[in-house]
Amino acid sequence: MTNEDVSLEEEELEIIAATGGRAPVQLPGRVVSIFPALAHRNFQMYFAGQMVSLVGFWLQMVGQGFLVFQITHSAFWVGAVAAIGGLPTLLFTTFAGVLIDRVDKQKLLLFTQITETIIAFILGIAVLSGSVTVPLVTILAFLMGCVGAVDLPARQAFVVEMVGKKDLASAISINIGTFNAARFIGPALAGILIATVGVGWTFILNAMSFLPVIFAFLKIRPIFINHPETYLHPLASLKQGIVFVFTHERLLYLTLLASVTAFFIWPHQTLMPAIAEKVFNSGASGLGSLLAASGAGSFLGAIFSSTQTRNENRSRLIFSGGIIAAISLIIFAFNHNFFFAHVLLFIAGLGLIIQVASVNTTVQTLAPDQMRGRIMAVYLTMFVGVMPLGNAFAGALAEKTSSLFTVGFGAFFLLLFASFLFWRGLLR
Image 1 (cartoon, rainbow, N blue to C red):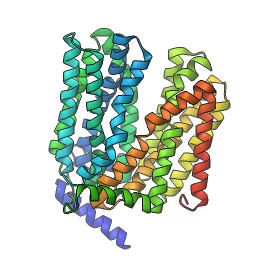
Image 2 (cartoon, rainbow, N blue to C red):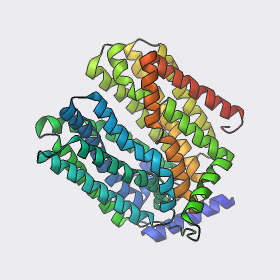
Image 3 (cartoon, rainbow, N blue to C red):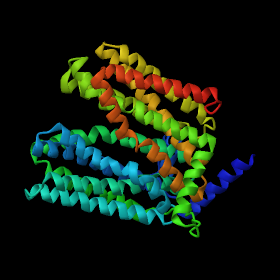
């Protein structure tokens, strides 16, 4: 038995001691073998709260876009408000990592959930009372983005405190799968609510959707709590995290891979409305089915990634997932068959999530416990933070060329970069 095996067995005993060893729902062994993280009491509670909360997130996103367009009748303002809401992730997330490493993450997440509840409730009341304005929506979107800039890396760093390192990969994959599942339920429910009771209720229900996850955070018993080195000045602490990422060769290139993927690959979903209309002449129904195919592949990719929780060779998963996604989207750029487009998007979604989940897990594994918040903050800034920039670049390039060319160009760039990393030995 290796030292690592002994360490994992000791960790499992610590988990049982810390949480009482009893999950609310005793799952069949077959389910646990696929989703090991769901065997944990902590993660079962978190997962249940997240399912409701993420549906609420999509209610907010769809409702916000509809509301702004309803007030302004301008696509520009819809995009502008969304961009302002996403700007804090790029500007503040790296700095938030310092705070995350210095405080109790569980208490911090409780604060962010309560704050987001209040913001959503204020917007809902403003709409229902007839006092809503574009400046108010913009301010609240920016404030929600500021809270999210802290909440997102804090959640990522807190996962290991809920399940330990042995089942970290499974927990990350389940989180990604949950997000993709909510991506179908939330927008559909938002459409029904807007058509029946009005857009204001999408924000009220989003506010209410935070209650289950707040309850979960109150009941979670962390396996361990890291005690940060608070003697460092915040700026020195910030520098320490940034320097660690940019001087650790493997961590640096994985972060750059995530950034390249976010900038060049993820915008293909943003361009899908134009592709559905101009390439396939399929309208809204075609757009829905194309996005559903991509989402179904993403969901399957998350399930597959969860089954690989014991796989020590994640580099192979990262490289394979990126290559699968890139080649599928390159072929998609030359395809004009509507049915085959669904197949290609399904495969691309599968590969993309395998890569993203594996990179996320590897970054967390490489991060020292006392620096996890800062390292995840830098990683998420380079990943989630650059997505709006990628969307802007893709829109400008598609305007000058075409949407299909832009998708193919981005996929080809990822193919080149992933191949370079493999050649350097960083993805072997």
